[in-house]
Image 1 (tube, helix red, strand yellow):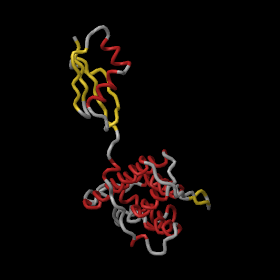
Image 2 (image 1 turned 45 degrees about the vertical axis):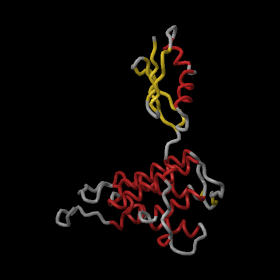
Image 3 (image 1 turned 180 degrees about the vertical axis):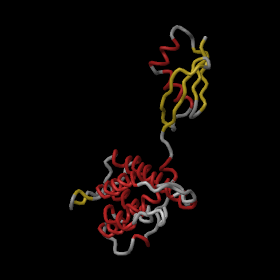
Image 4 (image 1 turned 90 degrees about the vertical axis):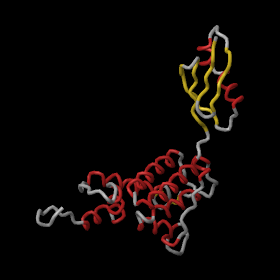
Length: 226
């Protein structure tokens, strides 16, 4: 952009239409800070919709939707993935990927129909460096007197982000035939028993004899047939 080329964009016009938070968030969303980026407002509507959607986690009109119920494991997982991602991205100034992570978390929590204060209140703190105005408004509506800028950053708990299950490739005489999701907590014997009991296993075994079953935890189950 250049004044001499008469192609300068007045940020006041964007702020009047979408608000300062949308402009701020969109600038971060455009790409890495160290790269030059063409200004294009086509994606700004998506960022604006995200902020409106975030607000709707808390309010339906004037009605507060927050619940004090304990969060589920899946809700905690979505939150702590976001906390970990933001911590990592702030260190490297990768703000664009943090904004993407926010959108992913919002999609996950929306699918879970999450309205838990224990999940959404920390997200206000996480959003505040990127969209300070909406975050400050929500923070005070949540009953806090001080500024959200002074709130402690949410603590990342890695155990919440770990997968509860893993995918096993099931092979017969070294040829993979299907995959199966099984709980991570299962030991080798339990994994073998679960795979042996599957209908698909019976189909591939047929009239043959199982000589042995090799289990590589979290990865492969190889059934040797004769």
